[in-house]
Image (cartoon, rainbow, N blue to C red; front, side, top):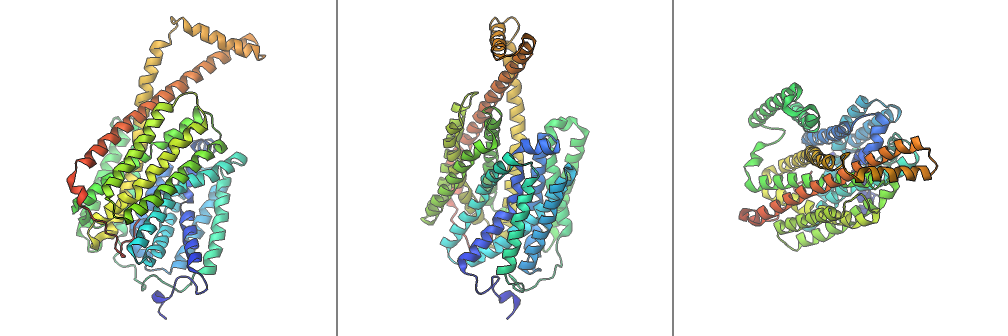
Length: 529
């Protein structure tokens, strides 16, 4: 039997066992994003700044996004089992290095490599999943399971990280990842056929390696500018100006090259479909709003003083909300409901989440008060993701539908990166405004200030401190209280801006008639990313 006609899984492997192995591959390739579930732990272990953590996330995400454009060619050259084992081995080596090293530069390099292995494993998962789905119903369910798994992977691995960090140092997360990789490698060797292929072996000729270098360079430089731009002073910094010019030149060279090649990395003809561009804007917008939840987790940790284990109910609420809404949304799609109306409903749930946070964020509160809004947030992400991706894929011409997926994941990455930059900018602006108002109020002429400081000092003295310790501690404690008030107020202001943005997006969707004409079209040849 020819290799490309042989089943990928061995004859004794049942369909449900094969699906379980595929799901295990998917969750393993997403594990690398678990390293950022507790930025405070990462900063403490490596001795870096918040912006460094953000850029490391961009490195692994951007590396994965860029290599996916190459992967659809490379996966046709290698046998799936050999390809997968290579990815697992590289991942294991990176995990061992990071477990024993505290060097930040080495960690970021390993993150870039693990972004490539994430793309390798994702490509195999997609090739194993969607060609098996014959009917539209099966493909819609496949979309829901795939994107549902992607959405819940972050809270799921955050629970794992919370438990590990409660008992061990940060590097032990890599140890757990290594064990998972070893188990998965054993399962793959046991269940998958070593000679089977997805297609006939296609030589790696006319592969756009130079285009890939342009693409990944542009992504990483763009991410660097958006993350470190505020810290460097934006265009007042010669480095930012130089990087901006460099990224513009790389982008122009990439566009010229892709326009002339017979087999481009990305077919730019995809941008001629108007509704596809609207779908990209929706993906970009969704990830901007989705990225704002990092502020909620920061609020729980900094102001409410939650330890990692206390945040587990919050993660569980997000997972439950996402799973339930994905299930319901897939049913609505199969029943033929209008995609744009579902997207509007999803943005409505996101607006409800913001409204709740605006009302309840303060310096006092309990974790239980925020289980409901995070559940609503999970519902919003579940309702939005599949309809937006389905809308975008259906708007693309079938012949170049693969390019729709590749550009779509770039839009998601760009939205995520822009959300980090927007978050940093609005937070800085809001904190500065609130801090100025506080400074105007808390002056030495304010009669309430010395009374409050004296009350705090007396609390320390009554607890057993001497008068000198009590005086110093009262000032430090008061400054901490003021800092918490500033952060809480700035958080509410940020969510005010986000809520206004959501209302604007919903209004545009309601009064944009051409987006209502897109018909769901998920053909068998379309493999999403």
